[in-house]
Length: 130
Image (cartoon, rainbow, N blue to C red; front, side, top):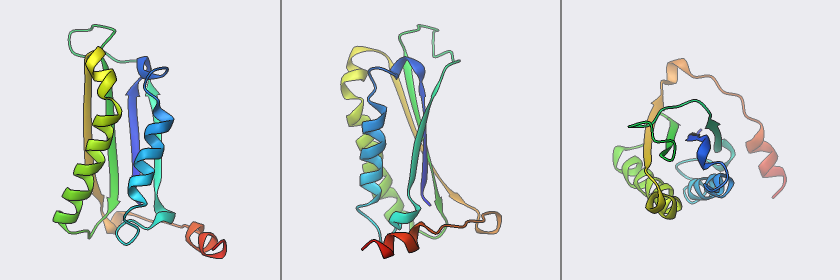
């Protein structure tokens, strides 16, 4: 972990540069490997094709970022790190937001350690490639 899942309205498919956003978010996670081990980073996105936003204007768009992290990181570290992650998302969509109605939401939750199971050989393979 962390896993970041980005849902976005499909009307952002061409102009939203979603792949670039994924890389920006993943790069941000790699700035803190002592907090979020690089081998656990997962960032993904998918368009939502059926939606109604606000007054129904089809030009309106949305982006919803949901990050799930393992429990145990101190609140001050979470707040600083994810405030910056949110700023990255907002900055990414600055021009898009200026030209149309755009709602951005960003949520972070912590996985319940008693309800979370993981297997990950990426860490070992990353160590071999060094």
